[in-house]
Length: 271
Image 1 (cartoon, rainbow, N blue to C red):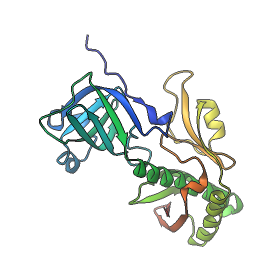
Image 2 (image 1 turned 120 degrees about the vertical axis):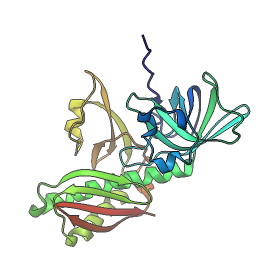
Image 3 (image 1 turned 30 degrees about the vertical axis):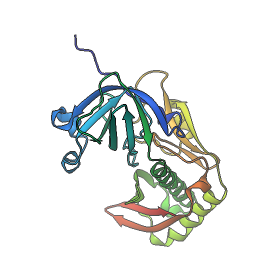
Image 4 (image 1 turned 120 degrees about the horizontal axis):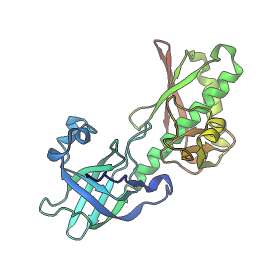
């Protein structure tokens, strides 16, 4: 019987301040030898620039998902150094770290312990942008409760990257609300509210979160689901990385509100 691959433990979901960690290598595969399902995790343009996919027992590298880009950084062992440029999670729970070895003559071996290190500045940037997106979502909700014509707005998705940051809603948000949303955003940031990671049973998560994506459910009875709680403002189901208070997001600017086919996109930036 073929043994099912073990899932990679996501250390960053339990300790977002962990910037280095030692972990054992499970596999090292040249991208040309990856199964189609694994190579499909990256666009072809990306796989052409990356040489290997490394899987470890656990990882501190944030996996791309939930609108947040993946971490980058390095893995090092004796006579081998691997630059991590992209991180993806396979459907079976393995985390693939894509990148290049500094010296093609030396690669990791399964069972070898490597030292992982993430780019701390990039992690902080992504965390700030991510939490700013949650703040924008909460601000829009606050404005919607005060204006009847915005009743029924439903969040669809969000993107929290330096290149494009926005929150999308089903429903139309007129441009006249931009200043009001900005005012609510500023208030949440200025209050310096704690940002805390929670693990809740599904029923509690549905009760306490302001929005739960359709189709989200615990995979087994009693499973705890992860959420981020901006204490005093609202919580969201979330698997990403976060700052510890709203002021650490910096200045959050609502850039514009665009509308198309019944969907409104509220774009923002941080500085």
